Amino acid sequence: MRYATTKWLAALAAVVIITFSAFTSAAAAKDIELSFYYPIAVGGPIPKIIDGYVAEFEKENPGIKIKAIYAGTYQDTLVKALTAFKSGEPPDIAVLLSTDMFTLIDQDAITPFDGLLKTDADKAWAKSFYPAFMENSRTGGKIWGIPFQRSTIVMFYNKDAFKAAGLDPNKAPDTWDELVADGQKLVKRDAAGNVTQWAVEIPSTAFPYWLFQGLTTANNVRLMNEAGTKTYFDKPEVIQALQFWVDLSRKYKIQPPGTIEWGTTPKDFFERKTAIMWTSTGNLTNVRKNAGFAFGVAMLPAHQGRGSPTGGGNFYLFKKMTDEQRAAAFKFVEWMTAPERAADWGIATGYVAVRPDAWDTPAMKKYVADFPAAAVARDQLKYAVAELSTHDNQRVTKALNDGIQAALTGTKTPAQAMTDAQAEATRILRPYQ
Image (cartoon, rainbow, N blue to C red; front, side, top):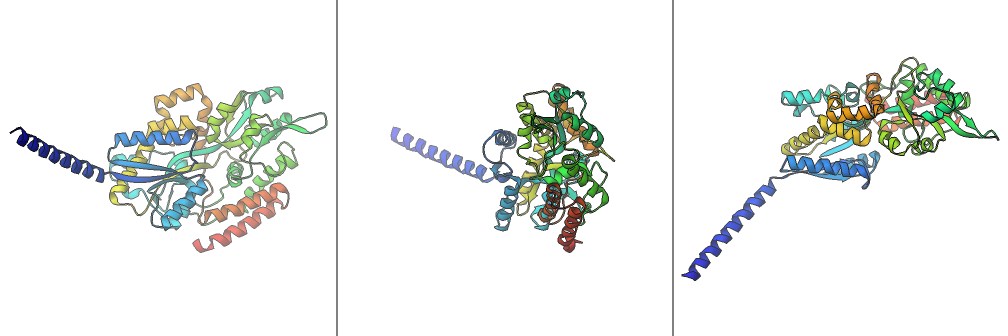
C-alpha cells in the first residue's frame, strides 16, 4: 500500500513539474524582447545609468525585456544600426542624432510615432516637449524622433580670470562687442610675449558647423529650410558670422589661430589656458566636477539676435517590428521621457531636460536651487533653432565644415569658403528638390 501511494505521489509530482514547466515556458514565450542601440562605448557612468533605467522599466513592465547595446560614437551607432537594418536584423529602438532624421527616412529605416498616439494621454505626451527640440524631430507633418539627450551650446567662463582682469566675475559678455572688449582684457602673455591664457576658444573640429550656428543664429540667419532640401551658406549674414569667427584670432587676437580641437577645449579651460569656452551643455557635469575654480555659465553672446542651435540625440523606432514589439517599444520611449526620468537624466548628465514639466519636479527644483547654472540652457531654448539637418546630411555638413576650416586656417576668405560650400551643398541636394 505504501509502495502504491509512493508511486501515486511521484506521478502527481511529475504532473505538477510538467504543468509548471509548461506554464513557465508559455510565460517566457510571451516575453517581448527589444534591442536598444545606445551611442556610447562600454564602461563609465552613462551605461550604468541606462542599465539602471532598463532594469527599473523591466521591473515595472514584466514581459518586456530590453537588451541595451552600447555601440560606440553617434557615427558608429548610425553605421551599425543601418548595417543591421540592411541585413534584416535592425535594432528595435535606437538613440541617434536628431540630425540623422532625414538620413533614416531616406533609408526607409524608421517609422513615425504618429500611428502610436492613440489615447489623449499619448497625444498630450507628444506635445509635452520643448518646441525647439521638436524642430529636429518632425518633418512632413509627422513625428519621426522623440527628444532624449538634447543640448544647446553654452558659454562657460572662469570667474577667477574675470576678476583678475578687472572684470565683473558675475557678468559674462552678452554681445559680440562685449566678447571682444572683455577678451582683450582676458588675454595674458608672458615676458616674451607668448600667450599663456587666451580669452576664448570656440572649437572648430568634430562639430564646427554646430558651433558656427552659435554665430549665425546670433546674426539672425538660418542655414537650411525645414524640409532639408536647401541650404543658405552663402547668405551675407552667414559670411559675416564666419568673418567674425576668423577675426577673433586674426584681428582681435583673443582666440588661438587656426582650428581648435573639440576634445581638448574643456582641458584647456580646466588648465586655465582659456578664460571662456563654448561647448555643449552636456559638458555641464564634467565642468562642475573638474573645474578647480569658480565658473559661470551663460547664454551665447547676441548680435542681431540671440540663440543657439539645439543638439544631441532622439529616440527612433525602426521598422520590421511586430505590432506587439512596436507597442512595447513605444511604452519604453514614453517611460524613458517621463518628467521624473527627464529630470533625473538631466541632473545626472548635464543634458537639458527635454520637457517643461520635468523642471517642475521636486528633484529638478532642488538641483536648480543648488546650481542655478543648470537652468541657463533651458532658458536659452526660447531663442534656439534647429541644428543643421538635410537630406544626405553627412555630405552637406562636410561641405560646410570644410568651408569653415578653410576660412579659419586662412586658405580661403570667408566669402569664398561659403560660396564654395553652398555650391557643393546645392549639387548634393539637387535630387531632393
